Each structure stands twice: as structure tokens, then as C-alpha cells.
Length: 112
Image (cartoon, rainbow, N blue to C red; front, side):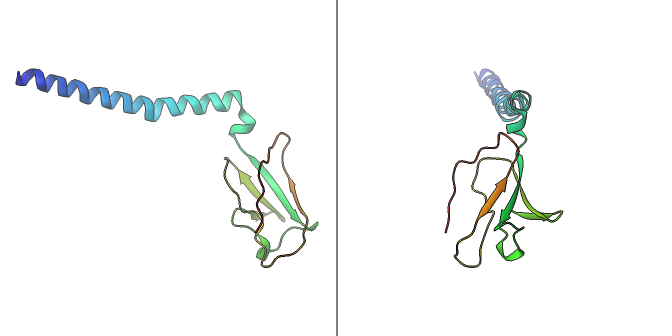
């Protein structure tokens, strides 16, 4: 009886380990690989360039996700989330121009 219990416990433990590896490593790896092969543009993200009132935003207007690289303000958009690209020191009327690669999709803006 005790031997059968230990055998069942070992078997159960092995199933937990095997399914943890499958669902934690193998499945995400396969899905990531499929995404890279089938949808490479969407899977790799996009680089956007932002202009404020026709110029590169100054340091006081740079949002936390925007960086100054090569004289332009840009951000790497790698996943669906809220990005902070402009963070003005005060309210006012401005024109924000976002330049991105073809196929880039922008769904939501928030202000304030």
C-alpha cells in the first residue's frame, strides 16, 4: 500500500514537472516563433518619430517613453500598452506629428 502511494506521488510529481515545462517554456516558444514567422512586422514592433509643433520636442516636453536619438525624438513600440510620448510642462495648443512605418496602427489617445 505504501509503495503504491509513493509510486503515485512520483508519477503525479513527474506530470506536474512535464506539464510545467510544456506550458511554461514550449508553448510560449512555439507561439512566439509562429508570431515571428507569420506576422514579422507586428511581432517586432515599430520605431516612431515624434515632432511637436514642427520641431523635435525639447527635454521638458519629452515623455518618459521618448528618447532623443540622432537629433530626433523617437520611441520603440513593442507591445500594446499606454506610451507616454509628450509630457508638457503646461497646457496649451500644440500639433503632435507621429511618423511610423507603414502598417503601424494607433488606437487610442489620451490627453491631460
